[in-house]
Image 1: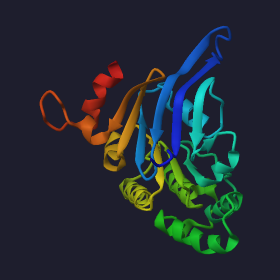
Image 2 (image 1 turned 135 degrees about the vertical axis):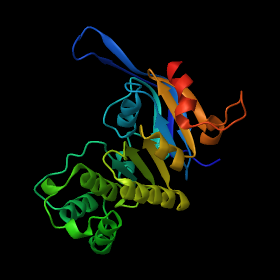
Image 3 (image 1 turned 90 degrees about the vertical axis):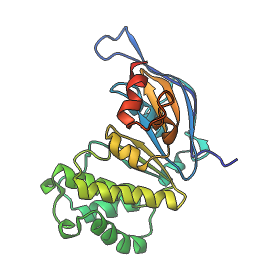
Image 4 (image 1 turned 180 degrees about the vertical axis):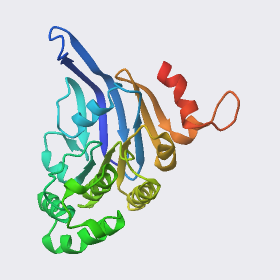
Length: 250
């Protein structure tokens, strides 16, 4: 059996409420699942279900209160694995005074991409996401959608083994969404793994193989997309929205 790219085992996270310090909040309650090499995996759930907390644990931005997590087959403490992870955040915080090309040069250097490779890869990526003609403009002039396009280019710049996309469809027009779909398909074809968190269910249904659903910090569903979309009672195919409704209410 191949080693999972991501593995959560009985992961819990408890923190103190910022408004009521004596009160604790359980953001994650014994979450366990694995993401296999070469699959596109979606993490879904209503607001405050624990999705963002789980991503923060995976990326080393916060510590779990209990359980075990591995990233690319190794413990989270081995932080060199982060160089093999591409991450697209839903709210970008890029320096507004530099250009897209300069930003990618900076992130490429941080990720250990050789300068010779960056010279050809950066123009190609900016062209791919539709920013070639704006490559030297300050990011301050970019719209929300343009910043999202740049974030996508930054996430795949180092050819990561694990690509994590947090609400990647936010602000993207139809053309940019198609580019995103194509890039995700290319990652899968290359044997790379993609983890998607999104409320854009139509896009999720277009790209993902399996999914996990969190509700109030617990794992409420884990399985193949095709199985979820098949209604066992009527035998008909249903939309992802229809399939998720009873799970979200559970």
